[in-house]
Amino acid sequence: MTEQDLPREKERIAHIARELAAAATKGELGEIVAREISRYSLADLQMIGGHLYTEVDCLPEPYRSRVRPFFSDQLFGAHHQLLLMYRSGAFRQADEPIRDRETFEKFCAMIPDGCFTWDEQAERTPFHYIPRHRLFYYLIAAFTMFVLDKPGHPVGMPFPGGFAVEDRDGTYYCLIRDREKEVFFSICNFCPARQSEENAPGKDAGNFTQ
Image 1: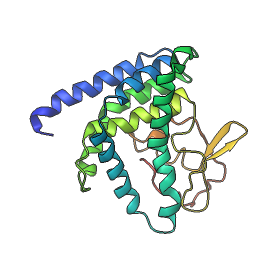
Image 2: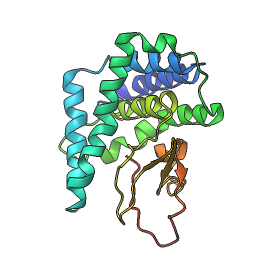
Image 3: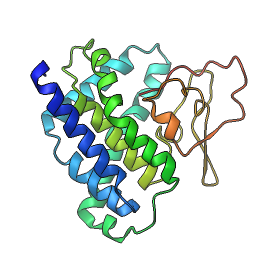
Image 4: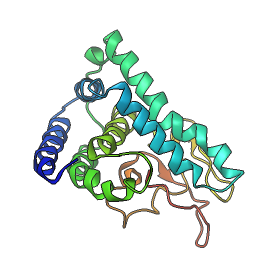
């Protein structure tokens, strides 16, 4: 992406974020997200997958092997479910309002800056990861957290220290839910999961802004 392309790309992503924020129901939000996701080419998905693989590859074993399928499910499992629901017409029946409107609007307002904050870091990988690839991540998170009302990181996803994202009779708990408040672009700040009470001071939960 050239310097000349940046203003246009910033405005495009800001426009998409405003469209998301205007959704009144889960069905409307699902439709908007699915339409945007459908614009990603196979080459885009390969780039996103390659970047994810490289990022996870930096983690130490045996944790790397344990967590890799959860990161894949977070992005591509949700991607598959989103498109299935869209093509089946499920979103047209979903007239339930979006939960926690204030949190949802703050999430949408964060997206444009979040996409560009991560661009420089992403360029350190062999993959030409650009802001619209980062947008894919936020679109999937919008579907997962505000249409499905599920945690941004999948249930069962392990963290260093032996803890995992939990589903306790329909209420979700996460060790790192309140650990990333200083990282404005982290999806954890908008997640429906509750903070695990096990997260005592000194617990090493790592950093999961991805």
